[in-house]
Image 1: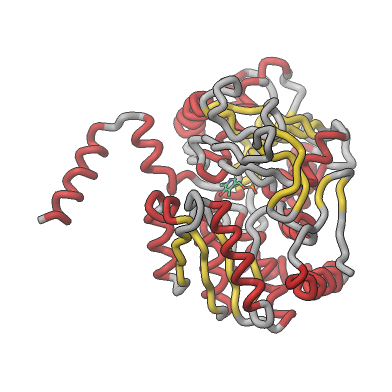
Image 2: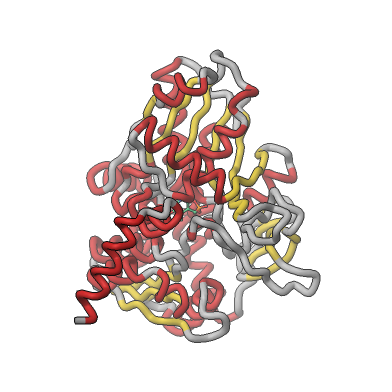
Length: 408
Ligand SMILES: *Cc1c(COP(=O)(O)O)cnc(C)c1O
């Protein structure tokens, strides 16, 4: 009998019979590791020597002066190795793979960031690595495919269905069912069947543990509000979990895309387009129509463009513990420019949703308040999108000349 876990009515583990033994092993191994203080110490040791933990808490003095409102602090997950909080999750799962004695990891990736993080972890721990990626996504994310392959991973183009993330997820499960003896599936966010939501948020909780300690050391008090962007929900759960028992307001910023009334967004919890359902092995809110058909999503940030959301966040919304809002592509680009010019910080477009939402709500707060924003990643990877959005003519010329060089 497979152990399941629900968060209110959300979560569960809807998996094929053939994977039950593999999930059982994972659940047991995770449980043992979680209760072993030595495991967490080893995790922190690797994260502080291989990634950049503890990541700093930056006081955004110029933005604070600019808005003349609350004191603004930024948790710097962008300083992790590979440029985002994803390192926290993949390194943690890598340690579990070692404990289980497995030698191969697989993952699926849409935007490619999780694929790069997994391939990096596999190189470090000496695992073989296969990454499944929709053919359409592979064409869109060539720089990430380039790095995965250089890191030694095999990147398999998925030609089934619509050739995007959800099709890659199906392929990854198929691989796992065939190779479960030596293979672990490194899921990238706090979604999917149990134990993944719990396991991924356990590793990401390092963000909130550090942030709470850091703000208390710096300010001697807790923030009024904490903001994080929400794709699958892992960076948000990571920082929020540090403050669950405190009188702190938690705000999740989803991808508002072209606007919630246009249908072109990826907001499952703040819009009216999300419906409860079971898919991809778990129950949550999905962007789907009446027949359960998944809708097309849109966001300027590829990492927020997902039809489902963590069952833990779905439950926290029902409880009223986390408030969900959406920031549009337009608001995100404005917040990006402002943050770059005022602070010299380059947040990933995903993370910038948290900044944009915080800035929109800032006039309601006073100089006595503190807000904390999670900068989940760095924006260097977004150079193509950002250059397009700002219609930078010199950049365009550069790309054309590069292309001509190759053609010659
Ligand atoms: C992948 C990614 C996200 C979205 O994932 P979550 O699980 O919601 O955290 C957010 N920010 C960055 C920088 C990412 O790379």
